[in-house]
Image (cartoon, rainbow, N blue to C red):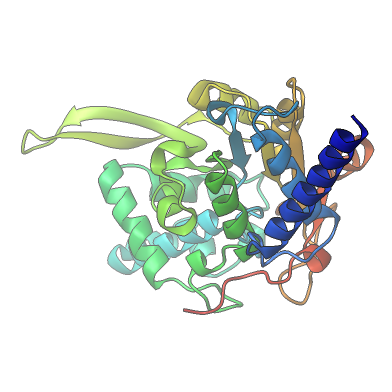
Length: 333
């Protein structure tokens, strides 16, 4: 019996050594992340929920991961990129329709006075969004977004906006999918705006994008072709408490992994960790003023206050951009 026990012990140690050696020989799935608590927590979570016969195993169908977009998957400064699209569209329209130049709030937009535009409780910005996001077919809107993404440049970095995505997050999305997760965007941004670029930028297909939406109506066009027309009416706001509602309505499963960056993501994170079994909630904390921007509690864009406090109190993973990310943006093409 002693000989058998000794043999079992030797085999166990040998197996453990081989497993460790094999794991260390594998390529790093998250090379854009610095080694540290955040990266280790992600790897450990994925490992335990994918370990068959393990106590925390989660079937692939239940491996739902949701990500906010603005400030989580791509940058959001100095203003949300969709808002910048709307401002640029007004400038293009004014060139074709000079009468816009004398009307408010379009005159303010053309003057570049963003502060004045936002001073009336977002009423001015609402009119700008209404003019640039309605009165056309869904196909025409998608074309205008695609053209803007191809030609517009960020005012500070001079990159295309789709080059302002976060390299570490691209790696994380790919890593999750390689381990049987289904990845979704759940964002306060416009769903039809994000669907134009989400597949190419993130590998997330249009049907896995949940966002805010306006009313869309069906009609037959002049040529008898069926079409959908975008109207200047809000249908659903996928932000704050709207995010869990959107997840329930459009995904139908509670996520086990959720990633955000602002107070607008708090309820999505709460909803995610509120389920049974293993759960993970993460927040990007923008701390890197050199490679990106440093902001949190007092920022008008991407304010992170209550969610930061709750993350610390509940032990959620707070990703410190400056210290946890080896790189921020992908290399220039």
